Image (cartoon, rainbow, N blue to C red; front, side, top):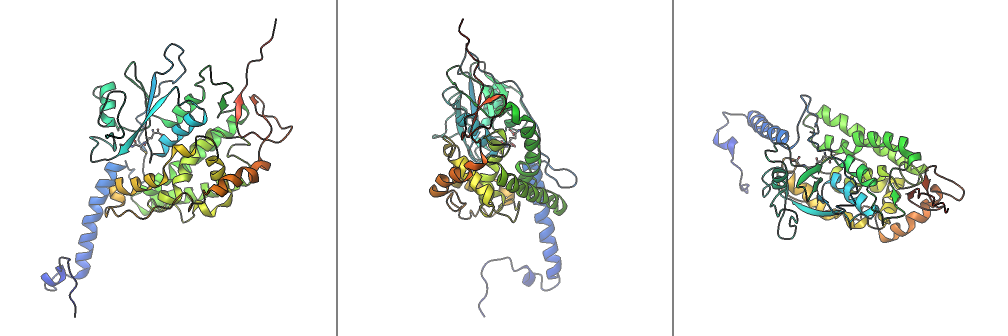
Length: 381
Ligand SMILES: N[C@@H](CCC(=O)N[C@@H](CS)C(=O)NCC(=O)O)C(=O)O
């Protein structure tokens, strides 16, 4: 009989004195304890094994300053959904001429704390740091918290401004360089109540829900999180059967916050994080909305799916210790094809702003997908 190669052949070595059951239990215990320690480092945990997202927030205001119109710089990473929201806001609101950003690489070996680093093709244009920790340290000497992205800095005053994506995108919505008229409003007055309610709901159950699945260390914690993700996907699917965009007939902050999670879902959260047995590509209204979002100018440039997929599987070592990276689904395979990008806006137009419908407090033309900030009426005297 052919002998299998490799392995320690412990059963043979112990000559039957130690039973297979004892060996299996010991190996499982040792591996699980090592895994738990790594998970706690990667993702802080409650006593019940739920992921508890830390908050180390710089929360300064970001506003247009006519004296220093180009003072802000933003550090982002492609895999990070919180960074993706910021990039979407920058591109949709056309602010990239005023606010520069730098993409970092995701390399926990190169980085001295956290995972974000720079290399020859991703250089830090502000202080030429080699990782994000150096930026935090240079602008806030003695900083001891997690070095998270996105991070907005004031490159002239060398100051950390804001590292909380929900605040950054709200501030970016009121960043209005004078040349930018008419300016897209992602937080239009008549939708604010709905946007706030849906933002809280989708943050808890979906945006952070997928992380609560992936970083859970007990079955009960995972079950709680997976139920939330499922419920949120179903609510999203039914909302999008009735509305063109998540909070109403035009694109809003809620779309910008939900898109990054949906775009990564089939490639990483559903698989690596085991967030749901549902797939976005099987939800017809969510898929059509995703294609419609992809049709907006500037949106496709904000995300590289294959790179994000590889980054999740490569960097989150405790979730994938073998380092084997499965084949990434392509955008086309998750349903974002040229044809569906062309067809979605036409098919969904009936759910949008129709002739004669008005949104109080905003300028919005019939058929338009954006609300614009109301322009002051110039009265000639
Ligand atoms: N406060 C954050 C969370 C950002 C966050 O957790 N970013 C992750 C990347 S997806 C990060 O930089 N983690 C590095 C670390 O925790 O060391 C936000 O802006 O929404």
